[in-house]
Structure formats: C-alpha cells, structure tokens
Amino acid sequence: MQDLEEQGSTLHFLDYWRVLRTRKEIIIAVTLLTVLTGTAFTFTLDRIYEAESRIRVHQDQLSMPVFEREFMQ
Image (tube, rainbow, N blue to C red):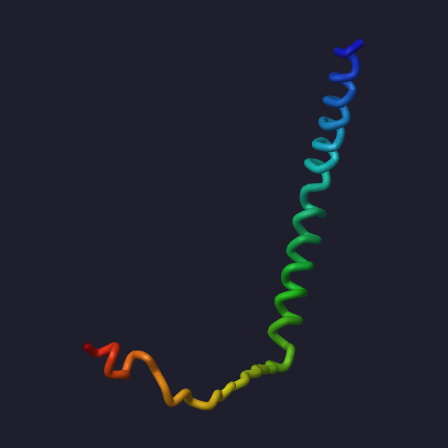
C-alpha cells in the first residue's frame, strides 16, 4: 500500500517535470519578457532623489568632570 502511495507521488512529480520540459521555451520567453519589460520601465522613470535629515542642538553643559581640577590630579 505504501509503495503505491510513493509511486503516485513520484508520478505526479514526473508529470510536472515533463510539462516543464515541454514548455521550456515558453517559460524562458515569459521570464525574459518580464525581466526586460521591468528593466526598460525602471530606466525610463524620472529620477527622484529624496533625503531628510534633522540636526538636534543641545545647550552645552558648562561643568564637565574631565576638565575639573580634582580629576586632573
């Protein structure tokens, strides 16, 4: 019984493989057409560059322990 189930799944795989092999040219043509169309469309788009930045300025602290006399000794 188990052999029949394994054979059935193998046959399904072989059927799919056979279809892919017989339709190989169509699959390659559709793939290339899709890639070429996408590439051509991308290169014909207007180039839009956009950036955003923020600068946060904080008030300086006057007392820094690195420059105090106790630290320097």
